Length: 171
Image 1 (cartoon, helix red, strand yellow):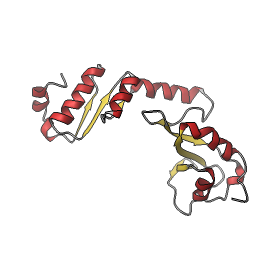
Image 2 (spheres, rainbow, N blue to C red):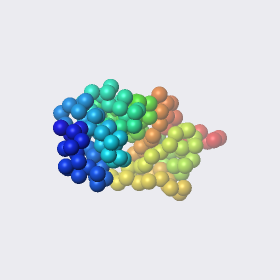
Image 3 (cartoon, one colour):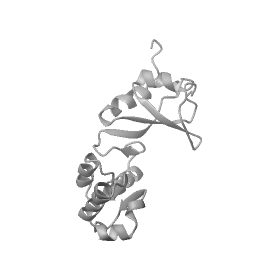
Image 4 (spheres, rainbow, N blue to C red):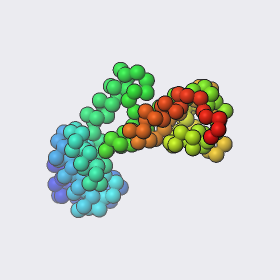
């Protein structure tokens, strides 16, 4: 009974830095996480929730959740759909995503900050020769780079279209 106050006290919840609720029941997990946070003051709590709709609601209420069904479904889709069709990450509301994008080779040599300005999106990082690279003021797109953008999902068609074309010279 992960939400029983006596059990939690006996387990040392008063000195816990974090609490993770991973029983087999969504209700038990959310109650446990709330008791840990609200009764014992544990700031860092996470609840595993199987129902993705519930997970979204709890996430909005401030209880971080891991919805294994959604994660599993996303992983399956990423492996069977064409590359880039499914985002790498999606926020709980489904409006913001992290996605791999392919850039036209004409973008090679462009500073990433200039690319961001022209495309009106944020490049979160680049995968260059198998390694993640954070963006600096001087980072330039090189051959073979895989760009990872963070954007509103409903803006991805525009972003992909702009990056598939050569950069506009007059911008």
